[in-house]
Image (tube, rainbow, N blue to C red; front, side, top):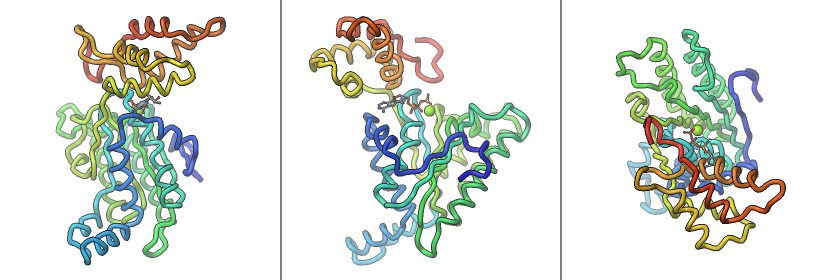
Length: 308
Ligand SMILES: Nc1ncnc2c1ncn2[C@@H]1O[C@H](COP(=O)(O)OP(=O)(O)OP(=O)(O)O)[C@@H](O)[C@H]1O
Ligand SMILES: [Mg+2]
C-alpha cells in the first residue's frame, strides 16, 4: 500500500470494526458527525446531491454547482483531549460502510515530525500530497469514484501558522503554501480525498488556509451531562447508580477557583485507569475511592492557558 513507508505514520483501511467502536464512543459530537458524514458523502459522489435536487426541486438548482470545485478541507479545532484525532481517525469507517467503498486513512502528525531541518516540513507535506493524489487517481472510473482517502494532518498548528506572524520563518511559509497547493489541486482534479487538519490553535492558522476550509469544526470539553455519559460508558459493569455517576460528573467539573472541568481524555485516560490500578490487584473498584480520586484529579489546563 505504501511505497514510502516512512512518510505516513499511520495508514488504515476501512471498514474496520475497531474504528466503528471508537467512533461510536465519541460523546457530544453528534452534530459534527452528521455534517462531516454528509460532506464526505457528497465529496465521493456528487450525483447524490444532483439526485436530491431533482427529486425535491424538479431540476438541478444552482446551489449544487457550488460543490463542484469546493476545497475538500476540514479543520478540527479546539481544546486538548476533546476527540479531534479520534474522530478524524474513525469517520472514514462510517463512510466506507455507507458507500460500500474502500476508504483509506493516511496520517501525518506534524508536531512529532521533522528535526527542524530547513525545508523538511515542506517536503513532507508535498510528498504526502503527491502520494495521496497518485493513489486517488486510481480511484476514479469516469464519473464514478471507486474509493476514497482521508488525509489527516494532525497537530497542524506546527506548520500552518499564520503567515501574518512577523517572526515566522521563511520555510514555514513554504510549508503552508505546500498545504494550500495540495488542497487546491485536489479540488481542481475533483479527487476523492478529504483533507482533515487538526489544531489546538485556530487563531494561529493561516487565513489563506482557513478560507479554503469547507468546514471548521470546534471541539470543546465536556459539560456535566457529557461527563456523565462518558463515565457511565467507562464504568459500565460496576453497577453504579445514576446518582453516583452524577456525583462523579460534578466532582470532575468546574470549581469556584477553576473555570474549567476535566477534558474527555482526563476521564478516559487518567481518572478511570488510575482508579482501576488503585484497586488492582487486591480490591474491587469502589465508588468511595472513585470519588476521592475524582476530587483529587487536576484537569488539564486549556491549551494556551498557563495557570489554572
Ligand atoms: N468526545 C469524546 N467522547 C468520548 N471520549 C473522548 C472524546 N474526546 C476525547 N475522548 C477520549 O480522549 C482520548 C483522546 O482524544 P483525542 O486524541 O481525539 O483528543 P484531541 O482532541 O486530538 O486532543 P489533542 O488536541 O491533545 O491532540 C480519546 O482516545 C478518548 O478516550
Ligand atoms: Mg489530537
